[in-house]
Length: 273
Image (spheres, rainbow, N blue to C red):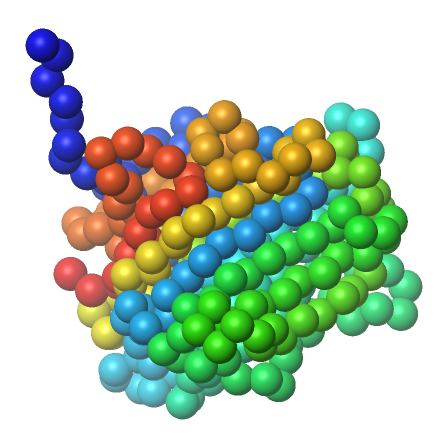
């Protein structure tokens, strides 16, 4: 009888190779799942009570931002024309979770950046859903409180180039810590745009977004709802990946069960050795 491997499958920045595939989020440690073209709606459940987050640098009180979001790349034929990200943002000191969106090329008169003033409960289970299939040119992001059985927040916003058919869109999931400008320094303390130097400057400052337990991730493909299985994923990306040999610790870690699936996994972003 063939042995069954029940050990968890783990990706880390010191072992995972992006193999030249695109990585859109490179402002800090991150994990991204890129859905296949033809997906225009997706969702994921996250238990906020399991999260471990510290966004304040121990030495000087400066803050980084935490993100857990869905997004969408938009194409015209084979050409990429636009994208947006939307979902959970954690920022400030004291920090709070709230809804945001960020549009790469916003429509005329539409702000490209938005943050909700509604603070989400830090111990609830939430379902985040992105829907671009309702009407041409508009996306809807909703946060459903699975504990209270009510919508905690919802926002409809216009997106240039978006087609409600879903054939020209590709959804994504993203989990990240991002560096604001006042945390971008090299190890000597000089301003820098070098990712490795900035990350090492921010190492061992207590910064983390750990135990992101994603469950029940769903994707709408070919007009139908599916569990987000491997066949609906174009590729996955870790940032940093193995090409950054400067890191002697796992700042980005993704853990699956004994089988890799994009419908259920755990992400740890931990910038402490």
